[in-house]
Image (tube, rainbow, N blue to C red):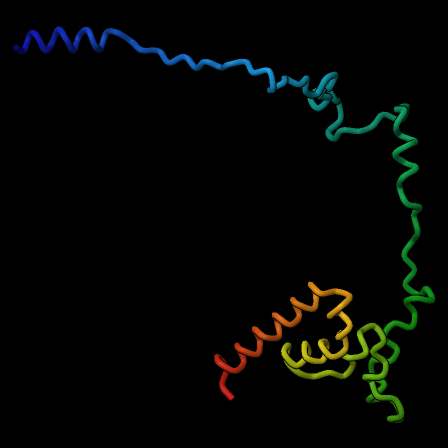
Length: 158
């Protein structure tokens, strides 16, 4: 019995099965010629970084798209008065409130102190026309307000 099993095992082991993957050529899958004419110049360059030669035809075209160089002027008209009213509440005579100087924010947020929920309520009042003009934004605004309303009432202490 033992010799019989050995002969069977020897035949099974000696026969090798090779897997051959058959690739069917399909009419709908086209082969494209990729990177035709591309010559990778990375290993052919004498210098370290790839450079465009000075006589190259596209060099002038590439340089024409670069913006004109403007040196940084810290005392230009735009920058020289930056922050001039920062200490008007301390150094001023009290006629101007610092909140009135905030011109780079929406009017409904000037001088506002509160949490996100209160801010969104003010925004909802100010942008009530979004109900018709921007319904998706209006819906997202109301959705956030309702979420904060539930959160503040259920999860926070009074």
